[in-house]
Structure formats: C-alpha cells, structure tokens
Amino acid sequence: MAYEKPLPNPDEDTKPFFDGLKEHKLLLQYFPSADHFQYPYSDRCYKDWSTDWEWRESAGNGEVYTWVRMHQLYHPSWKEEIPYTLAVVQLDEGPRMQTNLVNVDPEQVRVGMRVKVFFDDVTDEYTLPKFEPV
Amino acid sequence: MSDPIRGQTAICGLGITEMGKVYGHDASWFAGESIKLAIQDAGLEKDQIDGLLVNPGITGMMGTGIGIPLQGYLGLRNLRLLNHMNSYGATASAMIQYAAMAVNHGMANYVACIFADAPLQQGGSAGAAYGGAGRRGPSGMASLMPAFGFYGANTSYALAARRYMERYGITNNDLGRVSVTQRRYAVDNPHATMRQPLTLEDYHNSRWIVDPFHLLDCCLVSNGAVCTIVTTADRARDLQSDPAYIWGMGQGHPGNFPHAEVETGTTSGAVIAGETAYKMAGVGPEDVDICEFYDCYTYTVLRTIEDYGLAKPGEAIGLYPEDPADPEADLPLINTGGGQLSSYYMWGMTPVSEAVIQARGSGGDRQVEKNDIVLCSGNGGTLDTHGTLILSPNAN
Image 1 (tube, chains in turn cyan, green):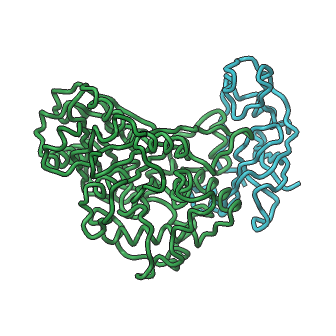
Image 2: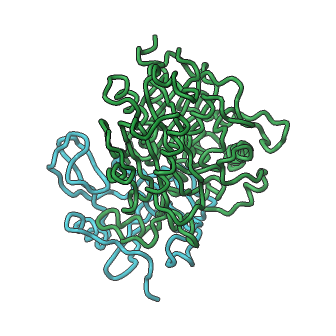
Image 3: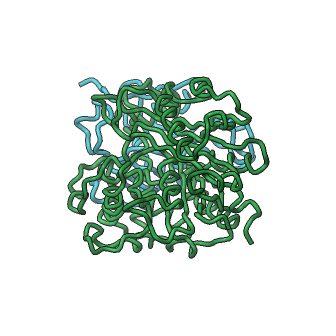
C-alpha cells in the first residue's frame, strides 16, 4: 500500500541530513568553536554565533526526555495509526529531537528510558529517524 | 522597596465583546466592538484615545488578523503611540506594560490595548482553526514534524506536562481537579462560554486529545476581542469607573533550546518575570490575594503557580480540593472567571480581563472579597515567553 503520511520536504540546507538518513546515518551539526552539537538545523551556532560547522554522525543513543500518546486525528493518513507515540529524545551528544517511539509497549514508556535510533525507510526516497528501546 | 512607578498608572477602561461561537464578523469588527465598550466603561470620548497597541491572535498568522490598518478602520486620528505587538500569549500583559511606561512619561494619555481574533468558522472545528491541518506543508527540518505526526500546541504542552507529571507523581485526576475548579468559577461568569458544572467523572470521560491531555485539559477557541485602556493614575481617578492600578510589571522569556544544557517543560518565564514584578510592586508571593493565570492547558496553571513561588515544585496541586465539584469545597482563588479552559480564549487578555474585573471589584457573584493584590500572567510559545502584571484597587 502506498505511504500516505506527510513526507519530509528537504531544502538545500537540510538535504545532506535527509540524504544521511537514507544511508542510515543520523547527522548532527557540530560547531567546533563552541564544542557544540546543534539540532535542528541552523546556519548559525546559537552559543557563540559561529557559522563554521560540519556534519558529524551521531551514535544514535539517548533517553526519553518526555513522551505522549497522540489520539487526535489532524491528518487523515494517521487514521490507522492512532494512538501513536511521540517523544522528545535526549541524544547523548546534547541535542534533543522530536521523534516517534516504535517497537515498544506504550505502557512501558517512561521518562529516562534508554533508546537508540531506528531508521524507518518509509518510502524508497525517505527514511525517518525514529527511536526504539535499547 | 517598590519602584517609583508602582501605582502611577492604571487600567481605566475594559471592553469585553461577545465571546465564543459568534459568527459572521472578522477580527477587526470584534476589535471595534471592544474599544467602543472600553471607552464607554471609562467615560472617554473616541478622540481622547491617543495610543493604540494591537495583538492579533491566530488570525494574525492566517493573514486575516488585526494590525496597523486597525487605526484607519477605527478612524483614530490623534495617535501619538502605535504598534503591532507579538510575544504570543505574553503580548497582552506586555502591551499594557509598554502603554503604562508611555503614559507615565507623557508619550500618550490614553492607550487602547486590543486583542482580537475570529478563527472559528460556522461548521468548522476548533482543531481546524488551530491544528494547522490543511495548511501548506513546511520545508526543511520543520517538515519532519508532520512526518512524525506532531501537530499543534496540544502536543508540545502535553510533552511538557508528561515530564512534570512523571517527575512529581502528578496524575490525570490532579489535572482534572484544576479543570473542574475553573468550571465552577465559569458558572458564575456571564462572559463565559462553558457554564454547565463539571465533575471529575466528566473530566475522565472526556476524550483523549493527546495523552496525558483529555479534551477538558485544553483551552477553548473563541471569536471575540478585549480592549483595555491604560492611563496615568491621576487621570484614572477622575474617570467614571474604578481604576485597576498597576503595581508591578515584568517579563521573562526563556525561549526554547532543545539541548541537554537547558531544562524545558518544567520551568517557565514566570520565574524571572515574577521576580521583576514582585520587586517593582514591593510585594511577595505571600501577599498575593488572587491569581489570574494563563491557562492554555491545566498543566500551565500548575507550572505558573510554582514558578511564582506560590507552591514548592510539584506541590501546586495541593492548593486544589480533592473534589472541587463538592459544593463545600474551598476553591483556590486562581482563575476566578473560569479562564481559557472554560470561559473564553483571548490569549493573554483572558487573565488580564478577569484581573481587571477582580481588582475593580466588579466580579458580581464571583467577586473575591479581599482583592488588594491581583497577580496576572501571560504565557506564550511552549512556556517560552512570559509577562506579569500585578494589579490593585489601591493607588498605594
């Protein structure tokens, strides 16, 4: 069945991030002058305003910072999925990511639970960085 | 020591339009009704208004909100102060703060501060008005949000609430106690949209929106407008309505930094804004008689109570009765008009309007007897922006 949920829409700046996902790599911006990993993408470090940075691969490990179960249908394509689990994951490198938790009994989800990235190849073209328990 | 500006300025006029599912008018129309009511309340003539600050609600983001053109629509030809402001839900209190400083220094005499919104369409849902469904999809990183199924403010506040609830052992029943308490106040508020009493059972039976939030954890969506007129204390004293004197003002904007170095969700700008306002007013949490807090969600109220130092972390719920539907239950003097949860959603003007009513003693059946210090909050983003007002019926 065709994938009908909203898909990412990369722009020029974020294309490397989305290309990385396709290769099952979670790329973060690293700003050396502030020794700072930043997410989501920005063309400037919010710590020291530096514009020098590089993509670095995240180890993909972290913990659940917080989570919810979405019951409200905002877009028809989620109809079969509701309720689904949304989370904020605290990556070990520092940044927090909004994501989905998968492969987990929702009753077991807790703040602080260790998780790792799960690359979900939703279409031939796009991969989403979801997370699952370690 | 209080600041010399304490009690030097006041809100001298308040206009609250019909609220809720009022169809067939745009935001400008509601703005016009609100300023008309406000000058009648103050006993002013239109031409005396020489300042206009405007804050559109969600219609401002949809392109149909009020803005600078409101001056022309209202025919205000004597303006010495004009601005279109936005710090989200903190804007209402911020407008009043800037107006107070302006009148205190002679930049204007009577500043109308207006919030107006009209997102509800006949036959459309509140979710359609605020959820963002159907709008053109975002690009870049932001496109991941719909791809993961993140929609609307409900999700981001539910995420904040969950972190707090797990840390302090707060339950859904606790959130329900806030919701039921506010509904009891709304029953006595003629401006309120939801006036039928609620029980905790009703709360638990209301559908899930995004767990941990039921429908009854979430604010209403309303069409309407509120206008407040700010002037100096000296002018306000001679006008027909009792002034609500401005004792304290403050802002705090922690923003949103999704990084391990910054805790989000379990703290808000009220910490800094409150400290600033308390200092200006020369009062502390122990002096507060009535609270009117921005309550986009039940959790926001608990968060705000703690951040103003009115309860220890995790203990705000202790101010609420076990069963607020019990007629014998002693309700906390918080959101005495029913708030955004039960009365009307005019962003920061919801708490401001009830704070003015209580400070002027015009609350009718719901008027609180001791109203010397009324603490009022505005909050925007996901606990990212914050404004504080401290109002009093006394000039000093």
